[in-house]
Image (spheres, rainbow, N blue to C red):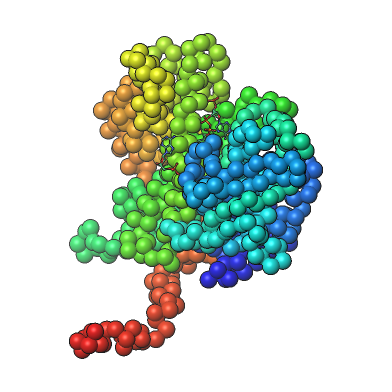
Length: 596
Ligand SMILES: CC(C)(COP(=O)(O)OP(=O)(O)OC[C@H]1O[C@@H](n2cnc3c(N)ncnc32)[C@H](O)[C@@H]1OP(=O)(O)O)[C@@H](O)C(=O)NCCC(=O)NCCSC(=O)/C=C/CCCCCCCCCCCCC(=O)O
Ligand SMILES: Cc1cc2nc3c(=O)[nH]c(=O)nc-3n(C[C@H](O)[C@H](O)[C@H](O)COP(=O)(O)OP(=O)(O)OC[C@H]3O[C@@H](n4cnc5c(N)ncnc54)[C@H](O)[C@@H]3O)c2cc1C
């Protein structure tokens, strides 16, 4: 099994390398080899980006060619058995020994063991290790080190290294996630990645970065990438589910009528068409976020970190919401395919297990939304002090006078409605925190007592950002399209707004003049729009243009031969190699004869 995985991974990687392509393409093409992920994903997805983001030019000149030519294979080992979210609580230490100009790595107890790094179990021979940096008796917090853990010739773990595979998981089972422990393991001083902080030969710590959190930069990059990845995963899942729903005929709503395609049921359209819209919404938002990200990087290259807090807040909530929505909607696609959606050969289980993992790794959902909430509350307080708001929070101004937004069910009006909900929920959080403080709580406790509302406020902010970006980008990109294409894409973006307006009627009643009659109108418009989209549903998923080799699905193949493919796959299963399993003779027959 593992051997096949590595072979396929290398065919994929070397094929991409020969074509001179980059890691996102690796992620895309690896889908033709793996239903889950390549064992080399962490190498290209985090090890290489960390060398680029955390190393000096001299260090990059040494390590980057080795990594890009696969002369070394790396991963990213930050999480430990005892800590994943709380990076400042990581227990692995790197203590500088000036007499030898080395760092001594230690995992002082079991909970300090690195745990989870993809590819660490059996594939990688190097890794990025986040460890608490000690020099001259002072701890300077977690810093990144590049560490060789295996002999590049024999692949044996180096002396002082304990490494292995963590065992089966819900998914990601082609990633050999591993554990790693250090017993007084020495590395050269130069293996501290020194772009943002340095240690001189005599052990003096020199802070270089203009911002205290640049060590967390790789995580911001991956969070930005994952929004795009989620769009891609959801597009695959809804392609499978819509194509299957066009093939599947079931039940008889009208006597003496043939069984209809299940795609003709309004409830099926309700399950699936939001998935098509959301895939588009996430893709357009991910491109917008990527452009924001590259803009902030450019600012930081000019020494300006002022735009980093907003990027952190955006990448945190968009990663949280895109992964949460995608996990839920891929499961909805599975539900829409009945029993056959539960078959591994449908590929929906693997897509779900990948997406639901992404809701956790690279930053847990709740934790990241609270990071965004921290930025929202700070922005509200700055607005109160008359300071300017960042672009994505301009809508807070409308809440300054506290007047209720009048409901307008045009697409632009619905977008403004979501702005009002976000502003209202952030304001309610600020009010709650201030109430608790006035009642004698300190700020930290007042914050903790408001965290349920803060998570909701961050989600509302994120939803408002997605709605606005999706609406604006659709208008911009369809300006040059044919009327027919423009009409269909406008239907999808309007469906997204109507769907979420109906999901959030409580908030809209609270923070806008939405009435019960307005809700009835929204529901009627939504249902009518589902019917309008139905004729184009298969064409819309075909437009995602997934080859069968990438979709890897008995239910979603282009030719629609679902039952034949299900049976073909069933007959391949090892249990069907012999008509009678030897377990019959060993166990069942003796049991039937009372001999067990
Ligand atoms: C942020 C934490 C939760 C807390 O950190 P802490 O140090 O305690 O800070 P705070 O006290 O909370 O805040 C202090 C201030 O710092 C600001 N801050 C915090 N973080 C950042 C940041 N990242 N950037 C900037 N600023 C930041 C914060 O706002 C405060 O500011 P202020 O005082 O309010 O002004 C932190 O502990 C944390 O981040 N925890 C989460 C841990 C985590 O994310 N771990 C990830 C481990 S690695 C992992 O999980 C790997 C998984 C496998 C990945 C596989 C996929 C990889 C490749 C994907 C490539 C896909 C390609 C496909 C492309 C395509 O589809 O096209
Ligand atoms: C498939 C997979 C692959 C991974 N790959 C890697 C890898 O390659 N490299 C790597 O370093 N790591 C990796 N990880 C680890 C991953 O980054 C962590 O699991 C993730 O960051 C969550 O941290 P945790 O496990 O400590 O969860 P915890 O934070 O312990 O979460 C447990 C609960 O505590 C809650 N919680 C925690 N802190 C707070 C708070 N401040 N306020 C409110 N609630 C809170 C969470 O919301 C959650 O409900 C991987 C994980 C998975 C699942």
